[in-house]
Length: 579
Image 1 (cartoon, rainbow, N blue to C red):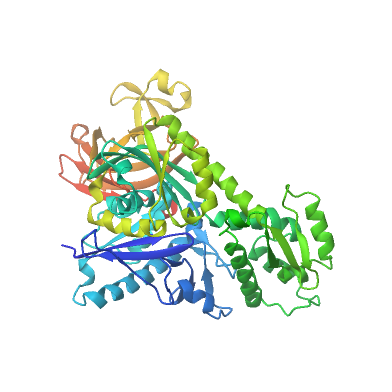
Image 2: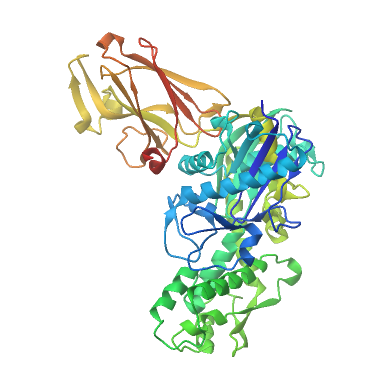
């Protein structure tokens, strides 16, 4: 039996952890080295060239003196969001397996968390700890698959690990936390109430719709939705819509490439790759600060030194670059030169204000979509660090005046502490909506209405004296189905092979895929069961089960005659299934 639950909130901008000795009313927020009063530390890690050792993490990274061999990783989570299997460091163009970097990050967090627990309970062994890790609800199963593999490699799995409920969906965790937060009017979270949880963090905006069926259980009434609407997208859009339009650069790699092209030229500054990176990182941090805009300063401006670009403009004058931008920029976005010698520009706060308003419009469109499908919604519950932005939340309030807008006193810690509560009682989530159609490859009986468009797949099976369709997608779970917590879906089949049962699982975002070979269908699991010896045709029956009630899926295959059985997790990721 476990004695402590540790929840890890792995965020785009910040990462934190919390733990509790099985008491949801008493949760301890953990700290990393160098972290002061902040709820979370920056999601940044510096590793050696072989990915063996952690040289710095979180706040430490900004003080660490990089060498040419060090690897500085940031924006790790957004690589997962964009379904990438590889990642390159901020300070280099080299690529590394994303799962290895994520595993190293969790391995470090695990060590810090255990040390913190031992300060209170030195006798608790690692086997007595139950780990829970958060992910966005809008993440597809391949993204969750990389997380599962990384956490397994980091040693977070043990006898207490329930694969189906190891990953806590961020808005679900936050919703659980809010039921314990006295700063919220819980009348709108009571039994019989339907509400939207709007989780706005650094990288993504994540929305789920909950209906509370009892004090201890909620169900999902609509599919999770959202997108890249986190606060860091404001930085990215400012870089692409303004800085790139003026200077031609919106990321470090483009600057570094320019540096490599001009190494033989006489630059005014003695740039090297490390110096240039530190300058770029400082420049981006100054942009990041501007997101804390309020209505009081909407009509004012902020200055920003852009001297980092001065050596890479091939002699172009700042005045000409600014004039060209101002001639084509959006209304109210014109830039002034404050100090030409030091390339200091004056930017209107309206740029940041407009970008946040654009985010509110995109998030509002997602909320409208939900409200059009679910008619009994009364409130929106805002959680996540981005919800501290008054411009964003006020804009959403104006868009939905008929809904009640709820926000805990500290929205940034809702997911971290909610992950711990989820670990203590994962079964509070009664059901979720399937985000994929899931099935496997078989040869179904030919049905002209279903298979008629694929005559090339029709063949005659003399064993059963019928026509069949090869490569049929046999549906197990259909997109949009309600998946009850801890429920099994079970079906019986006959294998054509006398000894080996071959199982190939597929997913599709279509509700009714016909073939496993059609566009939009992906192979996500390829396993086989050796029956031990050959069996005659009448003795090849087997039962296939799929447990898919949690945040993950586990399949099992049972052969009735030989009594052989095996289970395997579905990683829903091509790379992971090959490893």
